[in-house]
Length: 160
Image (cartoon, rainbow, N blue to C red; front, side, top):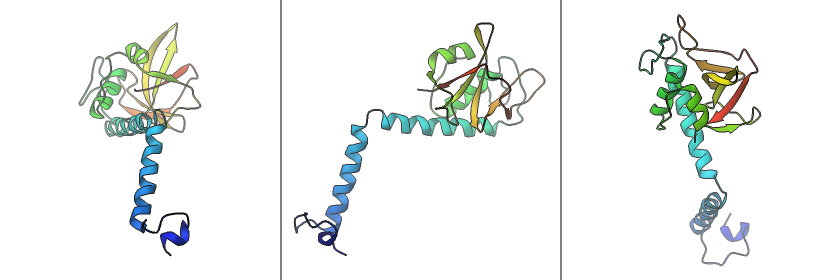
């Protein structure tokens, strides 16, 4: 089937290769014209990599103030995972909350941050793994693990 058969309005000099190039150019131009599309795609890649890094630390012991590579507290795990994914974040859960772009529960995706609230402050942070589960370093005496969300006193954030 020729380009002329599929696209009869095209000039005869436009070959299949030319038609493919025109389609590719239109697709690329469309992605440039959609505000934030490239940034969202890049953020998704970074979040996915951070999630893989956090999962690779399964079983690492909790250590207050630990930021890797072998021991972690909650915000240290997030800091480490995102650093390995190419993003820098502040050290504490509260500062990470301030830096993140806040999103709704409905729009959360794997790799987004989950902030735990109580008594008017953020006291814990974890990495959303999907299906109401998070990767986190919970408290002294525990290890990095994936577990089900245990409270609804949370909010979500996306690393910019």
